[in-house]
Length: 589
Image (cartoon, rainbow, N blue to C red; front, side, top):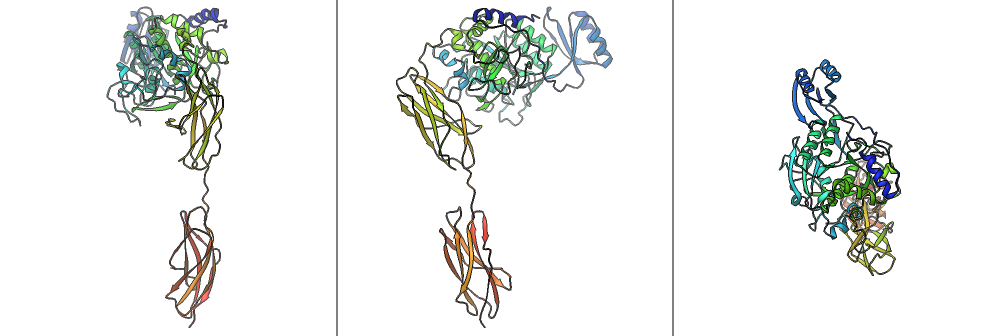
């Protein structure tokens, strides 16, 4: 295995851009649960294979990576046999069959941030390139992906676990992770949903993770080899786990076939030198995650295995079931680089020259080398077309004002008109955690100034998110996403007082009370509970009042020469309120 690939490439790029090279990865990852009794035995030659075959209690599968790497067997072995195989000179390694996991109509901010919008405008969209997504599968019916879907392969059964997506194909997505990754790579430009970095590539789903988002080494390794044997150009690996000799062999095999492999750095951050595998292997381009302010995402792993940074916070993309969603993770950063490599390959670059072009033009966003590698990937810069279109305007999203239980005023400051004489400013907004699907009217400005727009119809106590959108001269940019919570209205009950009755006879009386406060409701109903000798079991007629005032209600059918108790009551939306004072009166003979 060429363990110096990453170090060598960094040295080459360093000569061009003046960046210090860093050594190879030495990161560790989390160990997953193991398939009971299943082990992988790798052999260098026929003698090793024969020994493994003789000692196996049962053989489940075999794979051949060629003469240089060797082959492997998945099987069940007695403990004594495993010890013997580990010592055999023709056996390369013996390891448990562990597992790896998925690392957790507008153009998404990440696609714009990596410069793909300019590339799209000039026709650089990745046509003729084939990209394999080794993951949970891809939604075969998604309207943003159908046009780009090629063939697929499944190494694990499609069985939806809470995802509303039919398993039309064996490689369909029963989680949503692989579909989100695929959308960032290649969602088509169809005036709906989202657009990917390389919207003209052909996508291939290689399903190796189950409906809980994890898969065994054996299936993942077979999936990587399968993609390489098909001659597909780029493999996206938004998966991660501990170091596996078998996965390393599969990665080395794919690299030997000229396949570009891109992997997610992992979500174990904040941490140092913690890049997960397979991203930490030198043959794999490792990607860390940044936020919309170009800061390192707080969950992103870092270390010498990081080659590039890309957007990974609130990434908007396709999800299983035909919809769209916002995900966070280095899994979401990884496909930005996969798409960038696809665009460069389609433009005529070789895998090596494409990676070098990205290295030499990556944007230094002020992070440490172990956090950003060469920097934030820059598609248009790598293509040599950066700045060939108009300069986009910019607008900063300001804090909201005049927040009530049902309304708020949003604000943004136009900080740069770009190449336009005038720009329009609007806001995209929605309930926090959902798509910012609602938009305000556009306001036209011709100078750097602050724009305020109100939104109404909000729900009390709900949290909303919003961002400014600036458009002009065919260019568009979005500001930082902010949030606010509407005012929570605390219900206030009405207040009543019982007053002395009047017009008392042997069988009737007029009961009196005062509504001291209406409370939160627009109107309340008032009445009396009364009865002889402390038994308040009778109820008077009711009156509806919308303001504080005295009220009187006559009652009849009383018993002569009897003592009655009475209390005023107000009924409101949250129940009833009783007066503190209970009055007594006696009827006449």
